[in-house]
Length: 378
Ligand code: GLP
Image (cartoon, rainbow, N blue to C red; front, side, top):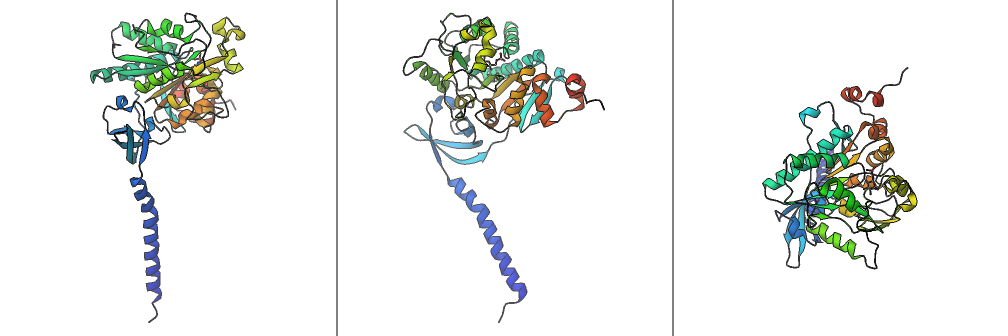
């Protein structure tokens, strides 16, 4: 007997449903069984709860949670990755209502606030994180930056330390970068900069404050290995960053080969960066060293939380390219799009191009920053 038209439709739909179910569940089932084996040196010290950590610490572009199984050969096996949600760990205190604006661009958190209040805000986040860890008896490591951008943060940290708002016994710091070829006591070295602006006032000892040496390099640069080891032993809970006018972070200059996997290394500085930093060397670009040691994007992205600071109009193009533009080696800070916990803190001038291109301005922002957001006269 010939099947009725209705019956053939029915079997066709049955087969279609089966195919859809198979096509959608098979990859999931296969994915769930998939295991990654990762040799991670020093992970022991990084793991408080040894069985569950965000994979992003190791692979920033794979934002998943994993269960880790330790093998005798000190490798870890991860299985059943689960999606990790973007976290909102920062808060804006009530007193900054209408003075600090939080918004999102291209899934990145951006806070527009003036430099003074921004410095206080970021210092408070750092203190909160430090105190919260201190209460649980855990050590904290901050990744720190130099340049003019972090100065308001450091001023607020010093003030709060004098007011005994936090202790530094369990704090250690690792700096991003250092020039090569300066004498140890040179006032232009980043080591001296840090001592002058923060380290001495926070009463941090040499065992707590880590930075590359500014001496010239030798063959197998032991300095890179020394800092690399420190980074592994002291996973950073917070990383402070500035951004260069050409979009550099640390001393990772625009370059065709830069990627999220680029390691900590020696780099040649671009002429534009040497020129931008010349004011610290009496305005003489020739006195600015030609090379530096810097944490690579790979290590920068391993920090748990990242805050990027940008003040002033000179940063507006770099900011817009880094946040809105595609991730590309010619804009090093665009690599930060790969990290889930980045907050960009900037003033209205640095945000100008971002807002023009992204175009989301609240009435409150327009009121607070009238010159920036005024509507053109008709
Ligand atoms: C230097 C530093 C960077 C810093 C940049 C911006 O090149 N190596 O870490 O972010 O300057 O400096 P500033 O904050 O002074 O604009």
